[in-house]
Image (cartoon, rainbow, N blue to C red; front, top):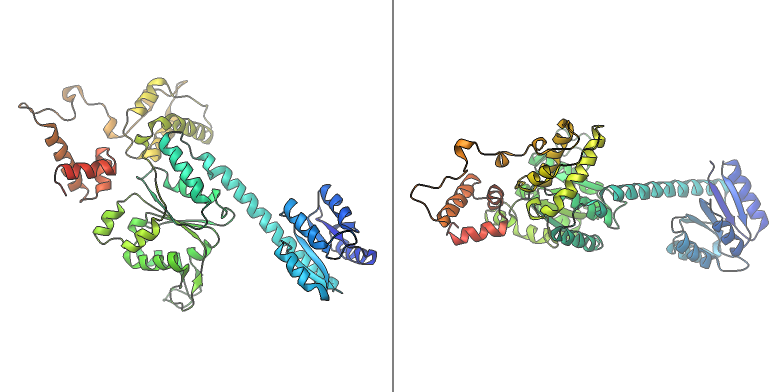
Length: 454
């Protein structure tokens, strides 16, 4: 179907000449001799572009432009003006016009402008549709959870998404859904039509990570045969998600700090500053304060990243969300494996609730995926739920996981011993030690102080 262009001009000869040229170029054409008839044509719909004269007999063309921009903000408008009224055309572009042409105009030049504006409008429409699809898939409405901790997270995401380019630091255990929250921030923001670039800082060695993030100039090193844009450049106008920021090599942290503070960087081997406007969302499961103490993270980078910290609660702290999450994964994998939907039995739900979920939502997803794939009954029974070793029932000969010594013991000594073992096993990493013991960071910090294990 041909694209339809509305010509708004009070001079019949101009409407005719423009219309003939546009029809020969394959466009469908409608005409209006004044502002009122133009508004009537636009209300009928089906217009893809407007050629608007600034001088109309019944109203000022700028007034028409402003009303158009308010009622149909995505509709491209090209202003027609005389040389003496170029200032008015510039004012119209400030109001949202896509371009302008001056009388007398060259018809070939006009067609070039029309094609360019049409192409740009088509790209914007595709970006808008893509953003809408991404929001439907990854927006805040798809973040599952009605527990108070998750409602608090979602409210903070709403406020942060409206906050322009403020940096965000997502804190939470592995598998708790930090990547989904990062995408939700992007999809709910005014950057939703821009790119979302996801980088895992542990996925590449240091030299490759630097070239991926910042790009390089031709000849910067032996294999640099052409110039390559970095991911920061690609993220311009959108969101850069840096996952596992706590593991970023120290040498790259200074360059990242400059991007955060000055929104500029140099490619490897380059001398020119590349300016970039991208919101930085970082995430980690590590204790960053501990990383600062051990010298693995720059303190100034930490404070720059943590302008807006968001703590993602582990699954064990929001077990009321577990049935909702399980139900969601049941439908996802039933569709994916082309298997009939089978609900969880009450016993299966209780088995899920009784587990500590060290792998959080990611582990729940894997458990449900396996149950959907392998279960054969009309419901998913407790026996279909295969959990980690921590949930494996003890053998009758050894009913208790921690047998009480014959002479008894003090419960505080048991706690101290377990905390010390966890710290030793994780080489002093408090976050990982807390995961081993099913504790929060605050709980293990309290236990460390309580038992003098600093």
